[in-house]
Image 1: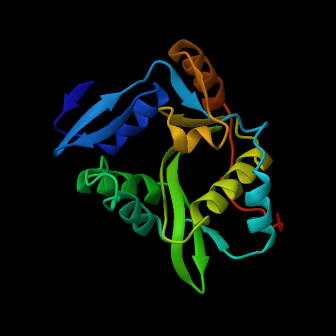
Image 2 (image 1 turned 180 degrees about the vertical axis):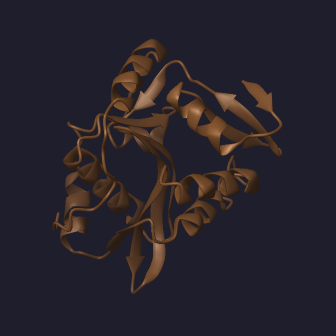
Length: 203
């Protein structure tokens, strides 16, 4: 990893096109390009039966891009198992700029008009780079993720990057590929033109 004192929006976009992403540690920004790389195959995604039953109950209203910064701040909040976060204030401000320029997006879950879960990431071409998710109500982030996957599939996205393998992404079907294979898939995905929007269908 390499430390960088100043990070611009242009630098951030360029980094993503090269398979590199930033994380904050103790107030400093570091660059990462894992090998192997974790991705979630979009075409083979299927929700667990238990999640399907939750989806069918229509417990959550799903929206996109209505409270992007709020989603980031919820993701940055300390977790019970870990008081540290890689989402610093500088990261929040930078990705908020990406959002206003149309390169970052959030999928949000609501109950009675209150934001209770969601996720955010960066979208370039046919690639979506998942960054983080949060849940204040059981299954909220899982349902938001389900709608993300359906949306990516419907609009022709070919790559969902989840960076590192862990138990959370593994439950969604994540696999590991080499950095070389990742860069090959990324190069193809960046040539695509895809929209990030809900279709309005009842999934």
